[in-house]
Length: 201
Image 1 (cartoon, rainbow, N blue to C red):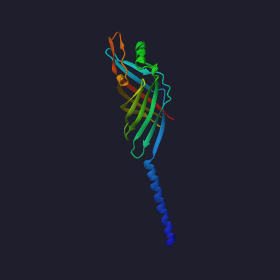
Image 2: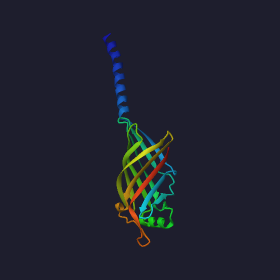
Image 3: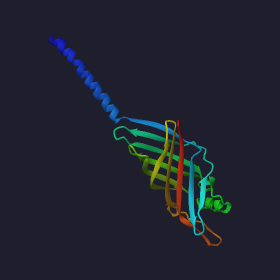
Image 4: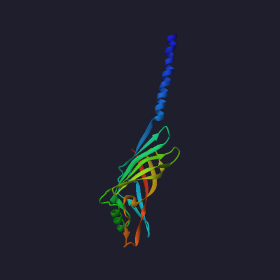
């Protein structure tokens, strides 16, 4: 009888151990999702001057990059990592001369790609805002910036992320172009607006 009771006592103990094991796994585990950044995405650079602003938009993005979304179950946070690679020569400033000068300024012939690397973009629970860092690689030099963006649309199959960040051309040892013998002076500060349109892979 004592043996029988000891045997029966094993099962509650085993059940408790199994629950603890799976409970621990659930708390510490992570879920993930991979998103394709589609060709409908938009990236625009606003370049100011003493006359007017020029809007230079990337026109030839084919949508081959990905963004990885990871859920931290223990903290409830969501973290995004990924990058967007653009052709430097694809920026169109909607002015033939400005487009040419902008390509020359960012050395598009020598450095044909512009890379925006999203690192540790963190979304807190119950919020659409995302904070993190981006590394901009331009004209052979890379610089890191803080960035804040927002999820504007989210379904099981699609997601939109929008944000903006300014940087200086001088951060990359670049000099703003001047037009008409210096009568038109381009600002050093550039504003980047991005709208990532993604679908679930």
